[in-house]
Length: 401
Image 1 (cartoon, one colour):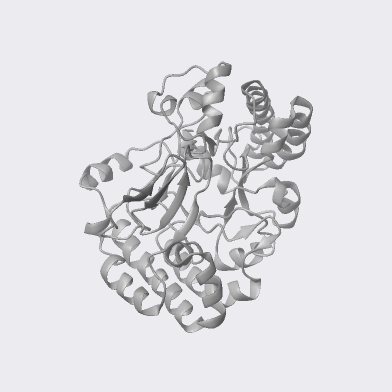
Image 2: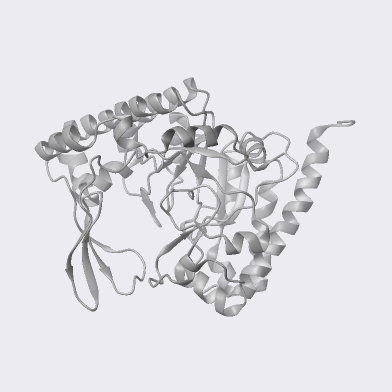
């Protein structure tokens, strides 16, 4: 089995001789620290990064955006599996994009307008998330203009010039291929267009507008991906929401059911009609109240299961035995030392027995994790997976197979 086969079998809870070995990502400062502590350095692009809070993509679910800097040194050091790749179709940025520009700059910060039309303040050097200042849409009239001028499902506007070459490359892949560069969900996309505050107040004060926006997004995705899937066969879909925080969802389950469930069902139904049976949702924070609704919508898997937000993969597996999972290993345990790592892995890795779970750190690995600790964690995790994979494979493949 290659990486693609192992991923598909694992997420379908089928017999599989080896769970995929991946990591989600790292802070740039983490990689820089590890270089100083013994990680062999070959990637000039990462060594030269100035922002300690910059994102360095790993190999797993949630990675694979074509414009991201992806780590290769850690993956090569531990022999991690081939990375997930996403189909290079722009399914979230305006087309045409806004002009990226630095609007103001001092020695301490920069005010930047992104290609998405978002204006934000970023510290120097980059320490983490920026401070969001403004968004491209402020009212219904601006939304209608934005939709008509910059958010049409025109495939020709949303694929790179080498699209025909990519189609041929995708046909001979041995890695999992995900639909879309960053399919942003029915909370995540309005949040990127309006900002969190306007989105939340509009759900209460302008429900008709919000229904219209989410219905349009469902139609947008269906129309755009209908064109893509004529040319490309993908292995799974992954939607980004980030609609929860440490204490729970940012909207109530009732609001989810009213506003998001119908467009989710439309999109998921379309995906299933095209043979896509693995559908991930990415949301940080405590999403436990929303899991039943995601399952009702047809979602089959989630990540990253932040341990600090009570997203315990063991407890969730017991409650939802067929929910696919990725992530879940508490990043704080890696910083705390070997005894904490032992406790964390002893609790979490047995969940992988039987399939459906790919364990790795529950978000970007932060710079308080020493290289020695990460090596201990990754080597022990791989050894435990080897043991569980062998037991699982022998038990599930049946005698004489």
